[in-house]
Image (cartoon, rainbow, N blue to C red):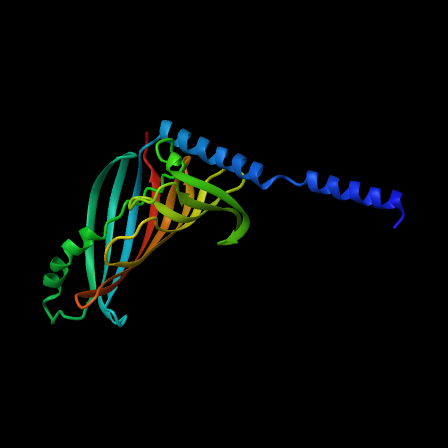
Length: 241
């Protein structure tokens, strides 16, 4: 190849390379949007009301269904750390050990188990008090639920039981959290696996879950082996001023 042509080709390739946006710079810009959004939501929080519907299925070690129930709540979120439950209820769909007429007894016996399964699902990774505990890395654009979203790898700087690791999907234009797939950063004794997935939507500047699914398997050899799956649908609505 003539020297003048080879120089032209090299210059052209260099121009193309430098014209491409740097992944690190893209990631920093996207995270800046997410951080600013979280700060704004925290500073301008407005109370909202939501309806919650949950389906819970509990299976044994052979994945045979033992218990299934449906529960619901009507809740007002007055502040990020303050909620008021207006009404709640549950309906037993199936219990393998219950005999006809004993459904209520089986439902009462499961109340303590339900308390143990409650998790903190605030998804507050970008708030000022939490983002310092994580590393965020942009992986590129992916299509999820029909939308093109920016995939961000989430990793805790230190492994703690209350922290998470996995993938967050953000709206590349606004930094809004649109979806996630998480596992605990540090395991607990007896927990074989715990997976959390969710889809979120923008509601008055807040990233609120539309649905949340949990898949939990607990195993203590010769003692206990349970598989617990829950799926929760949430419908938020703004309160009148």
